[in-house]
Image (cartoon, rainbow, N blue to C red; front, side, top):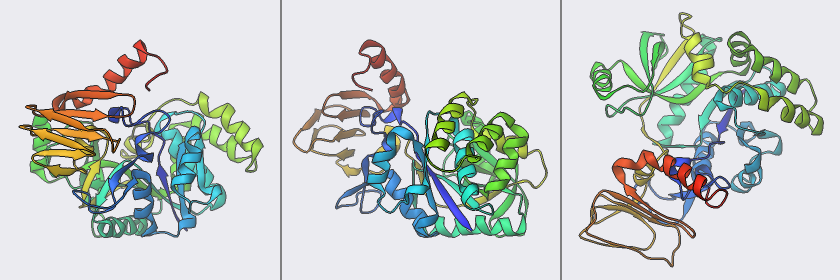
Amino acid sequence: MRHAVIMAGGSGTRLWPLSRADRPKQLLDVLSDGEVTGGGGGTHSLLAEAWGRLAAVLPEDNIWVCTAARYAGQVRETLPALRPGRLVLEPVARDTANAVGLAAALVADVDPDAELAVVSADHVIRPVERFAAVLRTAYDALAVRPRALVTLGIRPTSPATGFGYVRRGEPTGIPGVSEAAAFREKPDLATAESYLASGEYLWNSGMFVWRASTVLQALARHLPETADALSRIVAVPPGADRDAVLAEVFPTLPKISVDYAVLEPAAAEPGRVLVADLDVDWLDIGSWPALAQTLAQENGNMVRGLVVAVDAAGNVLFSDDPDHLVAVAGIRDSIVVHTADVTMVCPVADAERVKDLLAAVSRRLPGRFE
């Protein structure tokens, strides 16, 4: 049976001060209920958006969410249709190989023959119908290549240096699906331009489709410590005793991404890793400039909330308080974010340094504004 898990455990530090440790970006109502740019009406969260994409493909009973244990209540509040047994809770963060492995082990415990999609709560994808069609194709590929690890590759629209890439290899005979020839880390600009010009490379989206048993077997081969721990966890029936084993063993696991632990070693086996071509409008909402693409455009600025701008352009102006005015004059290419307890200002070009700024705030004022 087909299942999917939404990975929703990140902290979203580059969207500080809006995203906080106790309410991270995937749980914030930052997306318009209308179109992704300039839509009107209400708002919803990235997690709710991810749920809606999967609900177009799968029964709600087959949609799982993996998140940090401390977010359990907020996830249930955001997703009232989520079945209690479909919430996978990490006691601590141990990177994506362990999170994906835990989800696969719990899904396989319910359905040993499960085909499992792994998607992120950080993405905005349009149109949903095209995403749904490619996701179905990726599931279908498992009927032809049962042991395959299928990654969804985004057709690049620019020479982005902030994403990993996957190079397409030989066609598989499945429309839109190729063998994955190689994975490449975030390149410099010249390399990214060559990737784009070649037409052979796709952005590595961090979304995958595979049999739950297949990824568990890959972990047993390439990350046996994690595989052994997962076996110990699912050997105990669901409930307090299983939770106790999880709390004991999960924090001891080595931190490593699923790309390093599973995908890259498997790519050395001919035909083992496939890539499905996902030609969509895709935003990875990992920073203020990315989130800005979902905001309303007003006089050359990207805005949310009560904003007045005079002789100002290229700015991201954001207030989460409907009664608090953000007023700017004569500034260019800056980010101004107001929350109840923090006002943050930085150049758009330095948006990646917001994470460093948060670290400095935490050192100076520990425990107050994280």
